[in-house]
Image 1 (cartoon, rainbow, N blue to C red):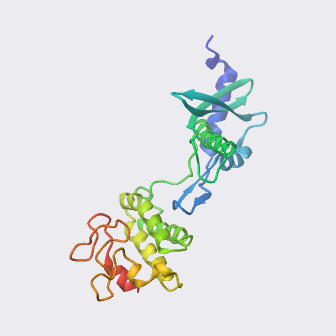
Image 2 (tube, helix red, strand yellow; image 1 turned 60 degrees about the vertical axis):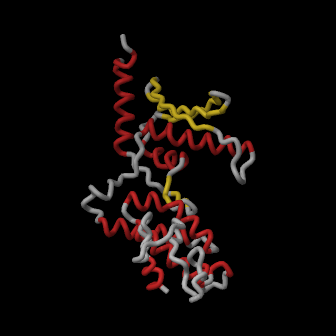
Length: 251
């Protein structure tokens, strides 16, 4: 007899399916440097507990695996109920070095990452939201407003123009592909102007855009502060869409 066809095995799979259908895990963590929301393994574990049927447990184990001279953490997330176990796996590779982390911290961070994805596979984790393009209850304007707010929060962490530019450069590809690049650039410009008035030597008007001041009139050279490429005659960036008029208007 196939063990998966045993009545209790069927009941165990049904119980897991019920948990999967009810479980919604929001991305409750925010990475200010990268400008995105995320969830971690702890987020999932905290939310799933109330949905487990009596007598059910979820366990996680890690195994170190060497592949082609590199070390991976292979995480197993298991749902145990009525004497049956359902397990899903995920792997993450240890970095050779990570700024600000010792060897033990690198291993633990890799383990947490692998566990998040094994739990996600086991529990079919989502955050209960639809893509903004198909969610009729969440307008595109509202969604872009949210992205603008997140971008503002991220740029608030920048203490110099150089840091703000680096953040903008990191996010521009994603923002362009998702359709909120103007919001990103507006948030960038606002923060740049704030820093320009903060006394930061690197945030003077002539330094706000790379190569500024060579024309002798105090105006910046026509270079995009995000992509570092020359602007068109209309003052727009051919790569990311930056509009110099926004910068001047905000100032």
